[in-house]
Amino acid sequence: MAYPLIQSAKEYSRLLEFFREELVDDGIMHLGEGHSGVNQLGGVFVSGRPLPDSTRQKIVELAHSGARPCDISRILQVSNGCVSKILGRYYETGSIRPRAIGGSKPRVATAEVVSRISQYKRECPSIFAWEIRDRLLAEGVCTNDNIPSVSKSV
Figure 1 (cartoon, one colour):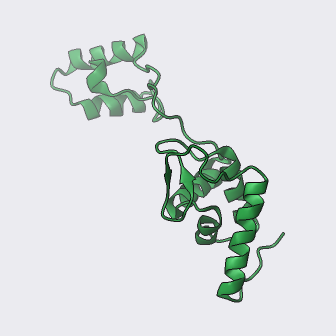
Figure 2: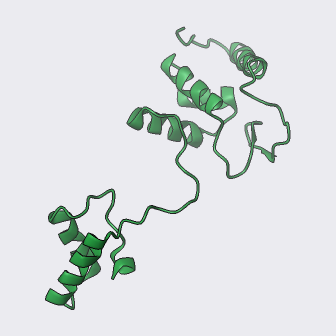
């Protein structure tokens, strides 16, 4: 379905109401059922929690049908920033899933990494942490994805 051109404010209001009713009927949008707040657009949210997958999917579907992010924001009552962040992540990774909340990063200071850092420190006791990181990357011991914070490993 192509996104229709909106000719008047009245048409726009009818379109907004249509989408809201459709989303409530489909169980995608809930009107104030135990949520912790209402945003400036009138949408409900749970502070600090990611947007439900169903709403994320609807954002992507509306974008694919030609809707502009600002229109998607109004239709789904989600902030422009949230819509942009979800679409950006979707275009970059193909995923609508949110990133992990909290938790700890996996420990990357393996025995080999710690051994190399110790070797660098023996060779040059005044070596800077950024120099150690550069050497770990240059020598292929680590990648940008798993390079440790050297201060934690020394």
